[in-house]
Image (cartoon, rainbow, N blue to C red; front, side, top):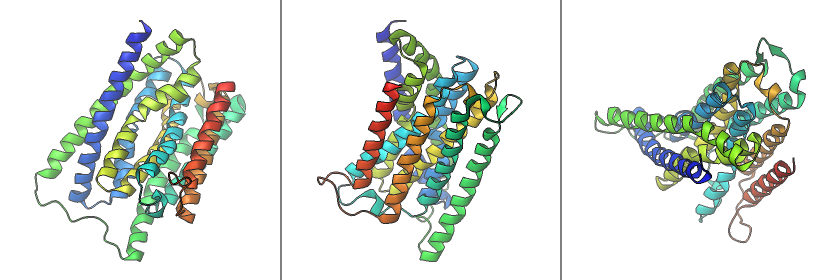
Length: 335
């Protein structure tokens, strides 16, 4: 297959995922109003799960069909870095004040869980073959799954308690029409299927592109595939901003990172040659550390609530995120 045809298929995947991401956001916002769930929780659990389906489908296909563990690990961790970098775009678009001024403090908990999960992944990548394993699974995989489920439960309870203590209304009043929830759930499900179908297409394209360009699978997975599979998160985030739902946008990106790390546990179950992280190249540990550093910067921003902007464009938190991403890209290119 020619390089031009491969790139054309990549563009087609991107367009399909971006359009489906917009449909997801609109439907999810209506579902939140109809069911009484908060926008932040819908972004963290519902939207983040669905918009991460390309990473899930790509990861399973990469290990079960293409037999490319580096493609799967690079895609999942690279998507985390891209999600955090996209917070810079949100910060730029919000001209009135930095996004950390208005974002809910409840996002601190989901970010903290993300740091813990990424830390375990980084340790497993550094240990390599020396990491503890059970049959063909790494012992870190069930731990990642348990931490993800605990994060969802804890954030939901924490957000509800925080709103109760502040005496804030949880959500907008339910929608008046009894048919709207069914219609919106149908639209939501249709968009999710489109995201899943396009996501399953990406691993083969990424592998063929790596061969055509002479690039390593780690490089393609961490940069190119990670960028394309995060298009749903980008589309949903921008749509949430248009709806004035900053917490939904924040929750979607941080929740997607939690789901992306958990995906490594699912990929490990489908990878039959041994623990997935043991067979992945150690360079991915640098990506995990970069995601940890960037998440830490976001947590600092949520606590300190910066007001000023550097050159009237970005908050200093966003400047730090860009610097961390550029450093990570440089180290990846030199590896």
